[in-house]
Image 1 (cartoon, rainbow, N blue to C red):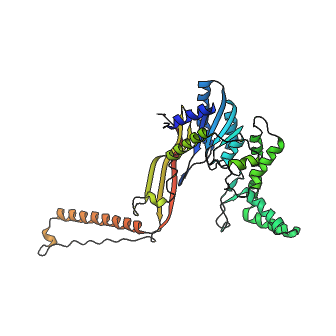
Image 2 (tube, rainbow, N blue to C red; image 1 turned 90 degrees about the vertical axis):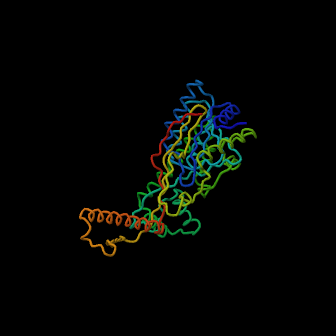
Length: 388
C-alpha cells in the first residue's frame, strides 16, 4: 500500500519513466496561493538535484495545480525546465487555470486526468481607482471585457454611426482613464505573444495555423474566464493531450489528495468559524503552508502565519467614568485611619477603577457589531524541509 507523497511520486516516475517535479499552489479558502516569481529559485534547486543524480534527464513531468498568478512567470519556468531535459510534459490532476494553463502550453504533452481542467488565459487587470472618481467602478477588469464592450456596441446594438461610436469610446475612456486603457492594450498584446512563444517550444514543432487556433480559442472564443476546459475540449482546441491509463490516473489523483490534505484545502470559507467564541477578536495560525514544491528527494513549502482579526464598529469615543468613593463602616472616621493606610486605600481604589474601566471597555468592544474581518498572511516565504 502506497502511503507517503514520496512513494506516490516514485510510482508515477516509474510508470512514466520520468523525473517528477511538483508545483502545487493551494486554493484553501482564506489562504490561497498563486503562481509567482518567488517559486523560480526553489524550482531551480530541484532541477539541479535532478541533474546531479541523473546527469542529463530525458523527460521531466511537472505536476501542477494552481488557480492563477503572475502572467510573466510561466515563460521563466518553462524555459528553465527545458534547459534540463529533452522532453517536458505537464500533469494536470485538477485545476490548472490562467498562469498554470500558460505553463501547460509550453509543454510537449499535457497529461490530463478525468478531472483535469485548463482555463482561458485572458488576463485580469487589478488597479486602484481614486475614491472621488471610482464610485461604482470595479477594482479589476478583464482585458477581453474592454474589446467585448466595443463589439457589443457594434454587433449586438448595431450602432454604426461614427459619432455615436466615438461617444461610447469616450465614455469608456472617462471611466477607465487613458493610462488604464493603455495597460489593457499592453496586456492584450502580451498574453498573445507569450502564448505563441510557449506553443512554439513544442516538440515536435506545431504548425503555425494550429498555434493561431489555440491562442484565439483561449483568449477570445471562450467568453467566460472561469470556464473549465476538460481534456476532450482541450483536444478539440488543438492541444496535445494524453489521457493516462487507469493505474497512472489513480496515482495522479492520490497525489492530488495528499496535497489537498497538506494544504487544508477543504477548510471552511467562513472566517467566523475560526474564532473560539464570539468575544474573541483575533485568530492566529502559525506555520500555515499554502504552496508546495516537491520531488522525490527535496521539499520546499511556502509558509507563514494566517491572521484573522475582527474589526468592530465602536461607539464614537466612549467615555467611561468610574467613581468609587470610600465608604467606611459606621463609627469609623477617616481621621482614625493612619495617613499611610489612607494612601494605600486610595491607591487600591485607583487601581480597581482602572481595572474596571479596562474591563468595561473590553466588554464594549466585544459586544460591538462586527464591521468586517481582516485577513492577512504574514511573513510568507519558501522554506526547505527535510523529507521523512
